Image 1 (cartoon, one colour):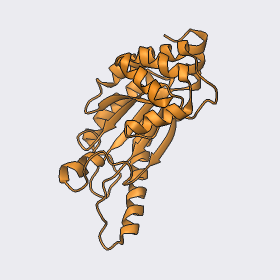
Image 2 (image 1 turned 90 degrees about the horizontal axis):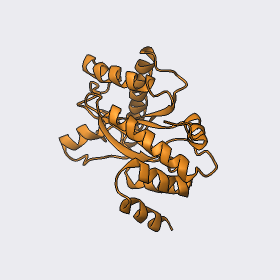
Image 3 (image 1 turned 90 degrees about the vertical axis):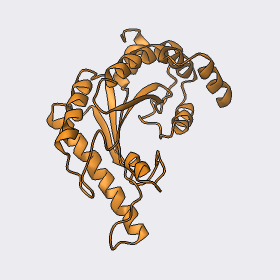
Image 4 (image 1 turned 135 degrees about the vertical axis):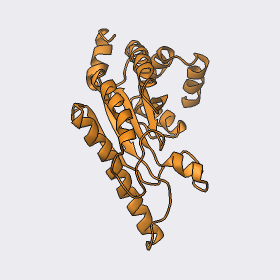
Length: 227
């Protein structure tokens, strides 16, 4: 069934309106999680527990098309469409070392990073109907005088601190604390590139920001008032 649904999604093309209809009709957190895994990321968001109808899914998909277009204007952000835990369209923004850069072993934001985050803050404040998840990652570089297990734990701690630094700075710029639903560090988990190369490590040292449908957005879509 999942393979059939995924095939239908592909055949309908790449616009979110079509995908929102198909996935909204499926409406399951299971499909959302599977598709999220296929994109290389764990699906974000809290499952609403009930199926989201096809019409509501289509409206959310269309709305997230607009959010994605705005996100693509944020400096140094790599933007793509992903799927949330409810099987609905969401927007992933990835900032690797060209976008949000930290000194080695540090969670302090530099001035160049703050420029991108200022633009991101404006995006979030203009899309209050979107919930936000912020995730931090590291490469697998070992720490000096540490065992492999200790290095993994230190990388996990560092990724959490860096994600929290991004959250704190966005809130200092006026982003509502209630809009940022989660701030998590994942350390060395979910690498997007080869950790055996310097270029790959740079890509893995990243912060990911997800914008996804809040309960209020889902309610508006189900009532037909989401624009």
